[in-house]
Length: 266
Image 1 (cartoon, rainbow, N blue to C red):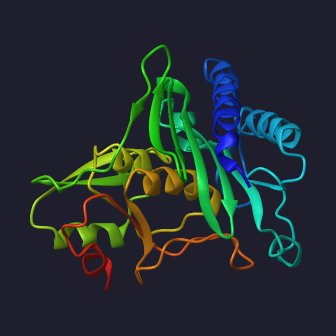
Image 2: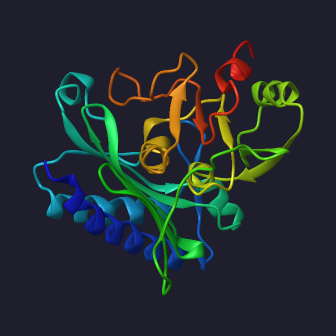
């Protein structure tokens, strides 16, 4: 499958969805509550409908999983070798707070691994892309495309990307194990992008996430030279079980620390 030819169309779809989100962002929108107590807005559902419609036209043979649609039975989806995995609005809490730290995430999964990822940042007009056999880039509107790569060496203090909305006890324990660090608080999948472009050294995620939260960012990090691994050292994989929750994981740029050991026993 020539998935590289899907990169630019998927990028345009994410950017166009981002423009739709921004139109709602500038209005007084209502906030509903989903069954899991997370927020839901018109921007989530509008982006979902637009992306799924466009992807179905682009690749009618490839199934889609979206955060805002019902999950297919595992007996059905475990047979899928290829599928799209999307989060139409990652960081809805940040969207509601109007701090700009929300994204549109589109990933292509092949054989349980993300091989293509697009993370659009509508409020900043930045789009991060990564694709196997291509590498990773950041595309800024009306500016030159720039290749991105993880940092080669951790800085002093160590730059730790952390969630703005999901800090917790386990993360605080991890911090105590570091001799010298600074926290870069960021919402949504932007934390993956910080690692991918070399603006942060490590992102420890020691609290719950779902697969649609991580797939696009993982593709970008891996194609920029980084790693996304579980605490047993294995690459984070997708559609391997009935539920869609990820185990705890680390997003690693420089490999000059024993990050796994630092994150264990929390």
